[in-house]
Length: 258
Image (cartoon, rainbow, N blue to C red; front, side, top):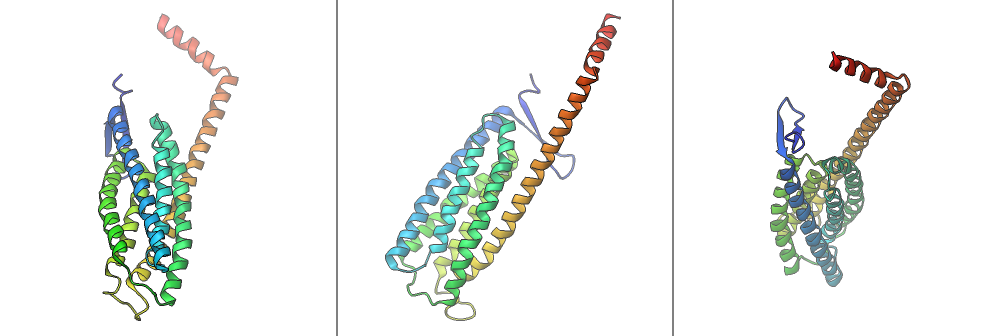
């Protein structure tokens, strides 16, 4: 009974391991799930606000942020799906599938944001950020700083790679929105190359590399698990065909009888 109520999670570094109870695992899973739901709601609201503000001012100030916010909401939705599994085995199995989707979304964010940022660096911005940009930037920084800390802590406890990268994606969103607060205070290269464009060009390169690595690692792990399962099935079939199971039962009965 004690073994069934505990979950041993091994850390890859050394022989250190963390043992958490079944109840604690699901309590942390529920907290992470609701953190993802809150992330989804705020991403949709703030991303839509940024997009509507771009249409209202007829500028692309905050457009890259709105794209990233919508992508981050998709990441949060897939992570919350992986956290809805009732069993621990299903949670970890869905984790690899969610990582593949998150990696693909990272690459999609790279393609959308990089194109817009490079174009914005070439063309002079026509409109300066207004009070709306400052308000949704501050709200995003405050809310997602708290949520990112919660996600990172829980991801270490339940060993969820998808939750960890969702938190990293939220941190990237915070980094992208910070330059909007100092738009005209810091200028690089020329007066047309602003800080937010330069930050976006650099940060989405990390998204591309992280997304590609996440997909490759997840596919590799799934292939390893599939190959191991195939070997186990072949071994069980071979033992059944050779009658080893029956011989082992007869031997154990003989030992018990003696």
